[in-house]
Length: 98
View 1 (spheres, rainbow, N blue to C red):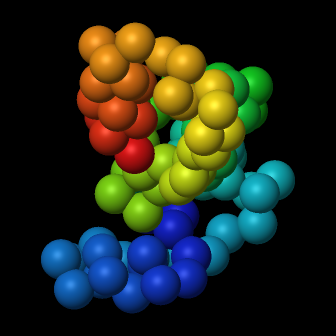
View 2 (cartoon, helix red, strand yellow):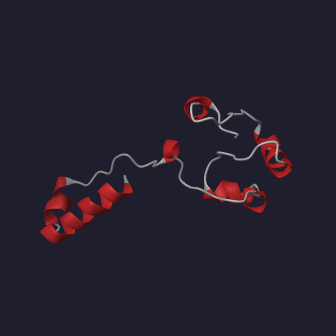
């Protein structure tokens, strides 16, 4: 699997053989079967690079890339102006997103 860094160290414990393949070599390696899987950026870039054409399955997001949004700020004045049920909807949605 093309998966560098600490994520590669973790999946190696599961029996995966991590590879740190250059971006330009990833598609051909996947196409030829040199690697069975690839970890890349996300759906847009994966499709742009054609991984969907040569990969049998697609899994997103990976456990190492679960979210980019870790905080969301709302001004106290704007928050207090919301009805309580909208505040609760916001809290639930934010918890689901992160």
